[in-house]
Length: 169
Image 1 (cartoon, rainbow, N blue to C red):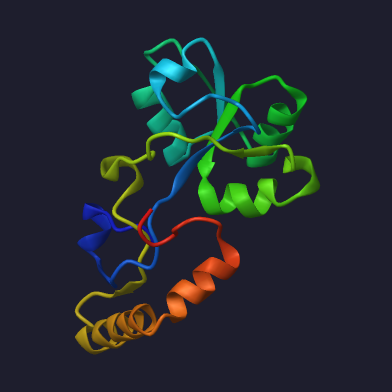
Image 2 (image 1 turned 120 degrees about the horizontal axis):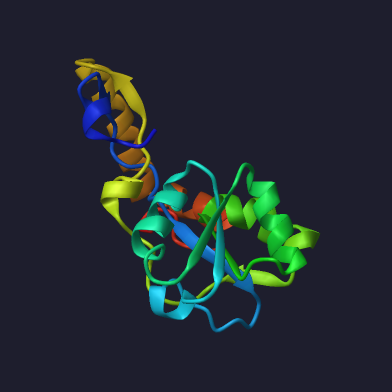
């Protein structure tokens, strides 16, 4: 669960499990980068109602970038493949597993360029929500997270499933 001020009033949060890693998906070899300047005059699709839509509208929407929301992520991928859009903004693990590692996504990849970050939109990372005031459980969960980070288990699992740093973002 993403930590927020509102949620923190009713539950406690463990240490971060992973970062909010966002990515711009483009055709392989594309020179597009996740910047307003690079995307000016282009169509960037996002899934409707997501943090990715909020980010794209905030940073690119008033800079000549057409931010086009779709009801489902599959619709976004289909239009990217059909050439109706230039790029798609998505949560990197979902984009990698749900598109890039599929036959449909074989000719696409993550755009190079600056990291897509804004803690006010994406939050500080994903944590485990714990009953408010349950210090024993919070300490146990945080201890377990510390152990798997320290002994290398976290990194081994991360490298097995992701082609990028899921913890640091």
